[in-house]
Image 1: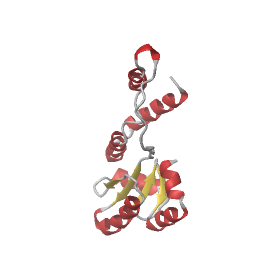
Image 2: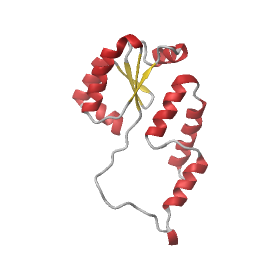
Image 3: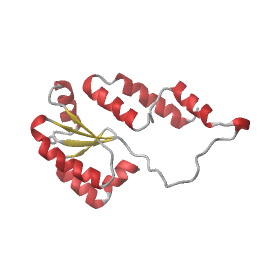
Length: 153
């Protein structure tokens, strides 16, 4: 098992322990991204499946380069749907897949988002668990190219 697989398995273990709607949203994002975080047994099965007869790795035919993306989540409350549309328009314009999560009915998620966003007013954008910020920060990051770097590496 490579160091990357060990890191992915450890991250999956932490992901599975996340409580409430925040945990549900994170697990859903992991599923939508093709389960990049998985337990060690699943990662070993994937590696074994990729190896064909004679120990030769099976590869797909060359095609357009596929860019892996970090999970992007937009957290908001009911009264902010107009502002969310502005954020999601920016993300869609840059070809970024995202999950919009309403945390209106989840006080624990509201607390966690407020804490992790350093008090930035909702709606906020999180990329790979780190708060990018609200609309102003998103537009500035998109204009400077920072958004693409953070999302696609």
